[in-house]
Image 1 (tube, one colour):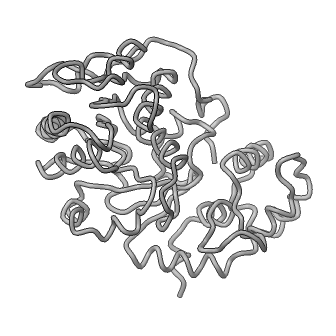
Image 2 (image 1 turned 30 degrees about the vertical axis):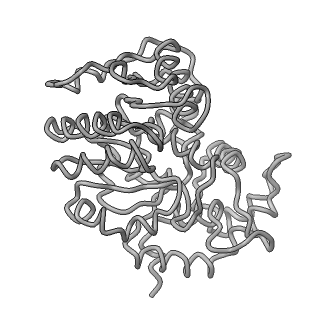
Length: 330
């Protein structure tokens, strides 16, 4: 019996629409972009429908009512007809200990939908205790190539998080992100890694096995578990890192270039959570510029109450439309 039945009907529909399912483009295999799926999701909400309704004959018939310059009903129908491919790839994912949730599932982190609204990833893949995605925490991010001082600082902050039961959130990239995440669960705390690529490979890594098995680590990604790294996927991943956090710490950043800089600037402009910056010792030029752009200086240690940093941000225009403006996105 196929493992597809372990997924909600909504998630099955969203995977058919938004995942490559191991297929290359052509023959209806090219999935919807996030923008196209947003268009379809709005169309569904306007009719009090859910993605799962498109798996039923009545819902398929109503697709004829879809009128959009960027999304044809025929495109949606071709994607929905990939049931055989869905069964094969889901069996492979689940047999590797991976899970899949879509925006319509209760397990999907509400803080991501509140932060990103209709820009929320339609699906999240992952491994480990997905309940950790609801916990919030401190994002610790930084450049891949940075100084030993910055790496040690990131590890010290992550260890303090573990001692104070504050979850560490990171992008899982080499350097500051990976070191902070590992220091958090190595010290007996909890950590969330949001990956831009290679989820399937990392899920089987000996480095993460103990954290995953003990329930102290969850790895998640908005991309197919076998997806490769691209600059744009890393940028989209950054949105999820900040969305899952109560506050963020930028340990090191190049000035006006690179993913760490772009992600921090985007979060500062969105003004949903406080973005702190390492502001002492040897600093990269990007740190100074982030402070000038509105970043908060991160206090020097030792730290006795990291949760005191989780303060509201003064109201400001945001980059993203909140989910409440459009009801809960499906």
